[in-house]
Length: 224
Image (cartoon, rainbow, N blue to C red):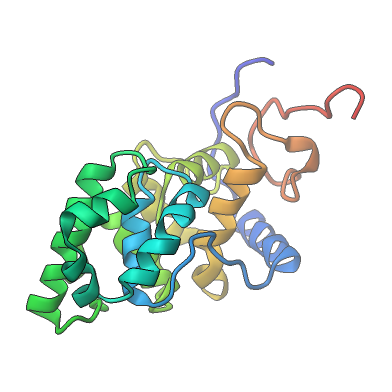
């Protein structure tokens, strides 16, 4: 396949059409991480860095049974948390962060997950992307967490061409129609995960291909 051409930002009408199509296909998109409450969502997202959602869900099933709250997580201790999440990449550092953030939630926030970006990002293992996910999913704030999938889709399609995740995020916040903002995060991530794949995007079955600036588009595989 020939090299992809550099894309230009899409016109406003095309951006509206893309999100209208996403909404038509799946009005209420959901993330794929399992969680019980705001705390377990936060932990799951911290653990998901450089790991698959399926792999995280497998590890957190028992973890969340034993520790669905910050106090219970602290009671487990670092060693037991480490043992429970050892199937996840970078598990030792992540286990330490989960223990430490649980302790800080108890010390600073009465055991509650704060509804504030600055407070979230002050927790161990929590960066801008993790904070955006928690704010969007649990607190229903119109944030967009740019992971590798969303960064790719933003650039390929022309929705938000940018050199850094923050640049893509800021452009999306400007161009996504307000009435689609709450679910934009999930629509774009799921589209990148299952259709607009990194090595070979499945353009032949892409619901938004008529507006997408990516060229050349991957043709239908032979024999399909």
